[in-house]
Amino acid sequence: MILMNDFKREPEDLRQAMASAVNEVLGSGWFILGAQLERFETAWAQRCQVAHGVGLGNGMDAIELALRGLGIGPGDEVVTTSMTAFATVLAVIRAGATPVLADIDADTALLSMASVGRCINDRTKAVILVHLYGQAHAVDEWARFCKHHGVALVEDCAQSHDARWSGQSCGTFGVAGAFSFYPTKNLGALGDAGMLVTHDDGLATAVRQLRNYGQRERYHHAVLGMNSRLDEMQAAILLERMKWLIPFTERRRAIAARYLDGIRHPDFELLARPAQADAHVYHLFVVRSTRRDAAVAHLQACGVQSHIHYPVPVHKQAPCLQIGRDPLGLPVTERHADMCLSLPCHPQMTDEEVTQVISAVNSF
Ligand SMILES: *Cc1c(COP(=O)(O)O)cnc(C)c1O
Image (tube, rainbow, N blue to C red; front, side, top):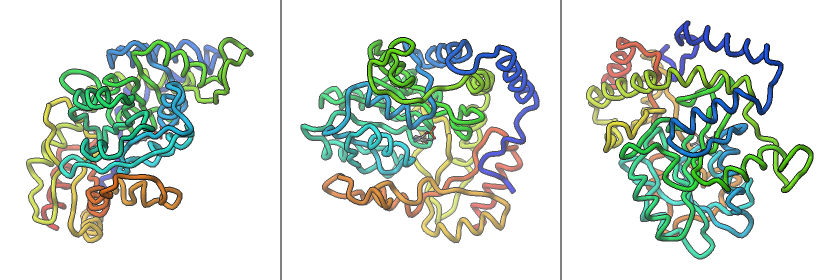
């Protein structure tokens, strides 16, 4: 079976390097908020060309703490997409703010600017732009749009490590970028981890306090924070895995290029090709199918696993039925949710396996 992710097939060199890194942490006798985290924060901030990286417990907390650090909470509205991981919207709710859901553009499944425009009002304090599936698209336009409307731009970069728009890293266009290093992300730990990146000194300081019970200095609590720290073991592992991110992303792009050229079937729609070469890091390769259930069964019979990102948009989840949304509704989101299908696209896939996936699709 060709799997969506296949970590057991990762290079032996990488496995050895991670084992040594873990050993080093064991030997250091220091496990939380130490030298490994500082190294990883510096390395990732540098990679993004941004002033600060603040390591956190996970990607959802990075979004929540970005909002809280900006003073966004009860009474404030935050506009985002319904076609995202549930965590994006849950983070807004956890921050005490009110999410408002906008529709997407059909060709990319990314947030529609026209729809967001219809959702903005006097209470709107931020837009969370999700670089879904690994696509950074027109992020500079979003920065101008948010500035024009006087709202903060927060980027959800959980799926878009190393994605760049006009040479600039995602996560650096607005006031904050939220990264997840959940194991299946393009840069993943061996557990939970996340990071907020920002140019803003004040926000970085605020989030550093918030992640550690609101402590200003040891046992002096300036605010009511939470416990959300990226531990030394995961930071050491991420430093090793980061060395592989460029070749792994190149491999994802090569696989995607073959899919874009090779998939030809009337029941399958491809999403738009990225407008710039380094804009898409193919965290997921997503197609749409008019007969998805049958397509999933056919792929399975051909030995190809597939997943759906996401079958139920946030506004159709039980606790979210009352959430505010675009007055014109979310028809493009709903159509996409009914048709989208993610094909295997991970760095360990061989050329033969890519061929096998293409044949499986085209023989449907
Ligand atoms: C994975 C993901 C998150 C949440 O990250 P966690 O580290 O799992 O909390 C948020 N947004 C998107 C788009 C994601 O894919």
